[in-house]
Amino acid sequence: MALAFDEYGRPFIILREQESKSRLRGLDAQKANISAGVAVARILRTSLGPKGMDKMLQSPDGDITITNDGATILEQMDVDNQIGKLMVELSRSQDYEIGDGTTGVVVMAGALLEQAERLLERGIHPIRVAEGYEIASKIAVDHLQQISHKFEFTATHIEPLVQTCMTTLSSKIVNRCKRSLAEIAVKAVMAVADLERKDVNLDLIKVEGKVGGKLEDTELIYGILVDKDMSHPQMPKQIEDAKIAILTCPFEPPKPKTKHKVDIDTVEKFQTLRQQEQKYFDDMVQQCKDVGATLVICQWGFDDEANHLLMHRNLPAVRWVGGVELELIAIATGGRIVPRFQELTPEKLGKAGLVREKAFGTTKDRMLYIEHCANSRAVTVFIRGGNKMMIEETKRSIHDALCVARNLIRNNSIVYGGGAAEISCSIAVEAAADKYPGVEQYAVRAFADALDSVPMALAENSGLQPIETLSAVKSQQIKENNPCCGIDCNDAGTTDMREQNVFETLIGKQQQLLLATQVVKMILKIDDVISPTEY
Image (tube, rainbow, N blue to C red):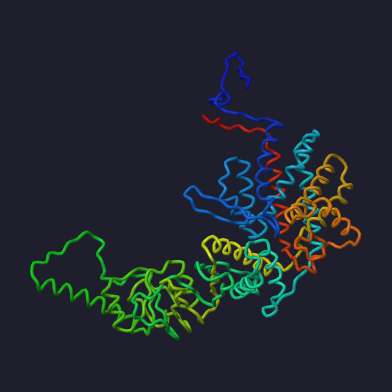
């Protein structure tokens, strides 16, 4: 790097320790960045679509994750390159906003970068490429709006929602029972949805998993599932019309906050102290009984004496229930969380039609079901599976399906999947390219070519001839002017995605195009990379 001199001829330093820094400038920097982004996209390319492969990732402490979800793969991958990290952020933002399409958005960005590299080699300025991409993405998003269909559904007619969730689940490992899982996801969302405000609070849906059983045993519980059992083995295992006291105070004598010690020098004093403690416990249990509680759920533990007393007084109790679960129980049963025994009143109790304890298999695992609640707006999806990895992956798949159902309630427009929407956009963008004089035209055409990469990857992963299949579908779309023709991944014998019931949400697809374009613009604008060298 050349030294700079001031007006008196004295050299001065522009960068500190510049000899220990590596620097890439101009086209080299752009090419290095593009190849880093493309490398990340290539990893995900093979896990796109119903025939996509899964990835197995091992964390530093030996935990193994097997997944098909783009966001999870990139989160776990521990990418070191800065541009690679941008791709990770890209799929994360798609996951947060839409919840689905995390693989497709990275594949799309990778394709845009590959096309941009060719344009840069021809000597087109990166800003012009970025502007062309911006124009093309606007055309594509508008075109998606035109080819989208409204899906009418009601609280009783939920078939359209189920079909769309099945499309999401078909690319996951759980696709053999995607019908039942899609129905569970839709029913869960409909149970907590506010259809007037078109809003869904996904926090009210708890997803709980337990190893054992088979995937088909997965169920939806209109209530709360707590991974705890009754504190005393002889307490009743089933309580009907339960009135629940939800406490965040421990069942033990109060402890002063200051440091203290009690001098006991006679047996009588010790007896008095013991009786005093017993009286505390007695009062606590009595207060719970007086307000009419038939079940106590406590955030803290209680010692054996309290446990014995509760058993003695026929007051079943559950201890060590986490804060989040307590909140969900309070929402579901319509109770209030009570911080002090003195504040217990009958109207603060939660009501549930049935509280039962259920054992699983031959193990001593027991769980508590709280069902038929006063307010059924909190539900639990309970997943069973052969091993821990299967359950984790099913949880991620269910999360995607829940997000898709939520997006459809917010905005009930859909486009056709299987690459049909991308091919249709590609044709529209290609046709619009001729209207733009100047260099942007090349970039708009490149965008159209990049859009073809998603159907191409779908065909590749399904074992079809990629170029042949793509061109056949494309010519069919142009000939019939039918934006529903896509890649026939499942060998159903038809390319019409309406017949195959392959749908995707419109906002999900639009978000994919917008996010991918933004990230690519950002990468193209970097022309100087200064990084400390490795010692």
